[in-house]
Image 1: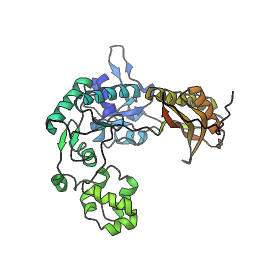
Image 2: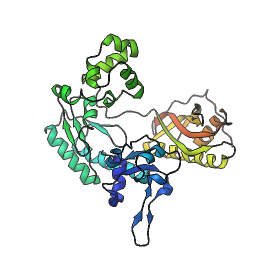
Image 3: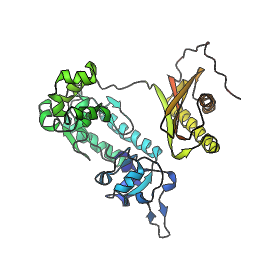
Length: 371
């Protein structure tokens, strides 16, 4: 989907179309309706806090504002950009709509998150371009939104292609097109090469996918190990045999939040307790919506010095009860130091099993929950 969160919000606020818009603000940043019925929106220059940009429109990206960037830094680059709060309920609603629209045409789908899917077209009778156009029309009819489609022999190349002609694009790539279309791109365009690996490749004089494709395997193995070095070479040459997996069991379900300002466990106890309880309730709701229960409850804390700690505890039986999750998570909290200020708090439930399936209960696991 094209700039998905921002595009969903623009359906609600069409007067912002064509403007630099940043998504990532607090709920208090909802637009204000003036006496004449017009809406007044917050500007990025007025933001104060430690938030992170969730996404931005293409107009804001042209000014250098991208997802994951600190909001205060974004304000320096695009002070006049409009700032909207995130609305995950709306994003999930439109996510379900677009996936359902595609599934009618091509049911072999691998879900890759709220705004992205892989589709296997191998056994479908129509040609790929016709299918792509049909799917784009179906998505627009169902949601009012545009998407971009990359069609290639495998998932790795299709992921890259889907970004080449955004927004509202269709890119079809054959293996013989790789030298012209793929090799001039940065190695960062390959899904699986993160900032650390890209930085190490840069020290070796490798910045493009084409340079990686002709790199010395011995040098790559020396710096990355045999397995990853071989994957790097295969990926740079467009080789990927991973299948479209239409279903996979989640390993865990979690929620976390980064605070606008550091909170002290003692001085801000009431606020932290409320946030902690809300996270547990949201995780429980996610479990129920997805049809899972879990036996292992965990927490994640990040202190103001960026040190991160985790703790977990296993229950006698799986649960999706917010009160049980809150109690178990609270027990985990007792096992960490609460002397320093906190900047992040998270709750995770793992060891999942689907509701309705029998689960093994370990009689040796005993967890005493406070009343």
